Every structure is written in C-alpha cells, then in structure tokens.
Amino acid sequence: MRVERVPFRLISVATAAIVLAACGQKQSAPPPQTPEVGIVTLQPTAVPVVSELPGRTSAYLVAQVRARVDGIVLRREFTEGALVKAGQRLYKIDPAPYIAALNNAKATLAKAQANLVTQNALVARYKVLVQANAVSKQDYDNAVSAQGQAVADVAAGKAAVDTAQINLGYTDVVSPVTGQVGISQVTPGAFVQASAATLMSTVQQLDPMYVDVTQSSLDGLKLRRQIQEGRLKTSGPNATKVALVLEDGRTYVEKGKLQFSDVTVDQTTGSVTVRAIFPNPDRVLLPGMFVRARIEEGIDNNAFLVPQVGVQHDQKGQASVYVVNKEDKVVSTPVTIGSAQGQDWVVQSGLNPGDRVIVQGTDKVKPGLQVKPVPAQLPPPPVAGAPSADMATASGNTNAASAASAAHGASAAPAASAAQ
Image 1: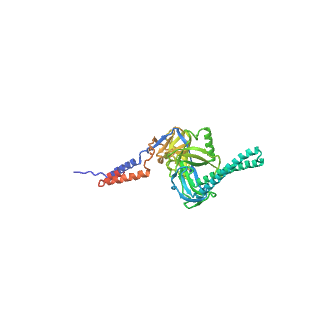
Image 2: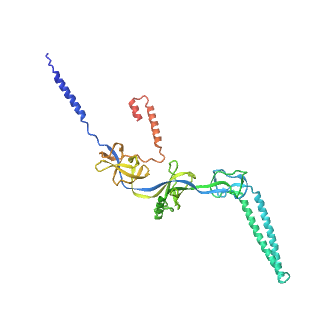
Image 3: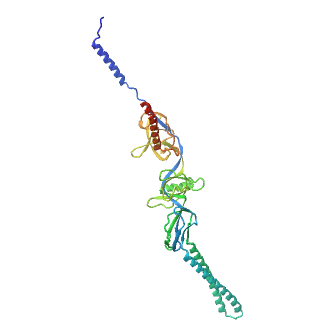
C-alpha cells in the first residue's frame, strides 16, 4: 500500500491560518451594553415648611419654699422627689413661741375690749350730766376722747391677734403649688430665719412643660410677621404644632403649641427666645434638658422630594443629582436642599417638574453617559418599632449560621447556597 506524504510546508501554512482566524475572533469583542439605572420622576408635592431650633426645657411653675418665720424645724413631712399637692404640709417649725404670742395678743385684746365697755358707759353718763350742768363740758370731751382711744386699742388688739395667728400658721410650711418636690435643703433641728428667707425646698409643676428655643432676630422677625398675617396660629384648634426631638434623637410623642416670641433681642448673640408648651403626662421631659424643636411654619405646595440616596455632595458641600435628559444621557445638576422628610431631601431649587433623577446605579454613571432608565425599586420606609439595621444584620448572620449548621454534612455547593 502506498502512502502519500503531505509536505510539511503545507501543514505549517494551514496551522498558521487557523491560529490567525482564532485571534481575529478574539479581537472582535461585542459592543458594550448600555447601563441600566433606577430613576424617579419628580412632581410637585405639598411639604410642611419646618424650622428646627435648639432649646431647653423649663418647668411650667417653679415655687421656692422659704421660711416665713424664725424657728427650729421639728420634722419634714414629705419624700424627696414625690408629687405633692397645693396646701400639703412639708415642714413643721416649732410653734411654741408663736402660740404664746397669740395668747398674749388675745389677752391684750380682751383688756382693750373691757376698757372700751367702761369708756362707753362713762360717755353715756356724762352725756346726761353735761346737759344738766352737773359736769363740765371739758370732762365730757375727755370721756369721749378716752372712748375713742379705747376703740382704737380694740382694733389694734384684733390686728395683733390676726398677726399672731398668721405667724403661727407659718409654722406649718406648706406647698404653694401642686408639683414634684425636689431636694430638702434643711433637716430637722435646723434653724431657719424669715429675715434671711431660708430656702427649704423647691416644688416644680412638670405637666405641662415649657420649651424655650432661640432663633436669630431675622428669623424671629419672619415668625412674628407670619403670626400677624395669620399663617401661624398661637391659639385655637389650628394653632401651630411644634414637634420635639430629644437628646437621644427620638421624637417626643406629644405635640406642643407655639406660645409667643420674646420682644427683646440678645445683644451678644443677636437672637430671640421663642416659647412653646408641651404636655408631659409621663414626666419624660425634665427641667434643663437640651432638645430641638421643629416648628411647622406652613405648607410648600411646590416642593420636590428626592430620595437621599440620589443626592451627592462634593468636597465643598455642594449638593447635586444625576438627571437623565430627553436623549437618555446623564447630566449632573447642582441643587439646593432643605430639610429632611423621612428618607427624602426637600429640594428647594435646581429641578423642574418631570425631571428624571437617578437614585439607583449612581456609582456606575458619569455625565454624558448613555443609560437605560427604569423605575427605581426603593425600599419601603421603616416602620415604627421595627428592628434597626444593625439588629437585622445580626439576625441575618444568626440565621445564616443556623442554616449552615443544619446543612452540616451536605455538599459544599448547597452549604454555600444556604449561607448566601
């Protein structure tokens, strides 16, 4: 059998042609795909205009309990920090000297009253005798004068008795208002003085509570103008509501009402004080707490809400968003943002109705890039009482660990899938 041999040169040429064809296929890569981004289409929305101001809480009523007579404190009749009623006795001061003074005043009054009886009888007798010329007119006038002095002595005696009774009553130191009593400044056995107005304790009414916030005089001028124009109400069912943010960042459950704006501007800070009043049934608010008050100044019917994930800030703090134009190209647009509304920013300027703002995929776009816009799939707002993100992450890790433990002994692929 005869075998024909193919020349080596022909084999080399064929091999080279095949290699070149394969290289040519690798160099012709498919065209890049247009990135897909999630957008929201803006429309005007009615948003409340809110001013957030720092402030501190203060008690609705503050009554300092001070000594009104001199004496030794016999006992204290309250528990520090407890709720006391108006008129409830807090301290008892030794009443013995004031009981003696009252008895002395009563005796003096009785003596004056007895003398008045004598003088009245003498005047009546002299009145008859002077008409018969049995006594001189001067004697009658002296009797009338003594009668007047006796009347004055009785009046002075009654006043002395009243004063003694008042001082005796002051030995019972009572609460002037209903509220929460503070620390006792004196102990049984201490000597208190009315002349020194010895401070014994303090009672504060904590429901409701005042919140005093400060704002610039310019903002205060705008606030007073809005009250005068009727946009803000300080009384009635339509009174302006005020929300409160506590020191831990939580929002106070009760809403407050705007009371008034101070008429004096602090010359050192150029600010004025605005007072609001809040219910405090659970004693959450305590005097002196630092808070932030949010005053609803009105409604902006032409505001734009942009999800916070779609707003970028440069090194200078300037905010901007990516907008998809009519040609589906990305345009960077600077904006001015206001307050936050949940998961959104209130955009005050820079956008128009119908603008398509990119809120998903902002990390893979740049100005001028052609994109494919689709409606954004945003997560729902957090529900009150739902666990935080950290708790959710920890729970997810725990569930993943449990799944991995349950799948012990299975193949690597199912275990990896369960962990994911």
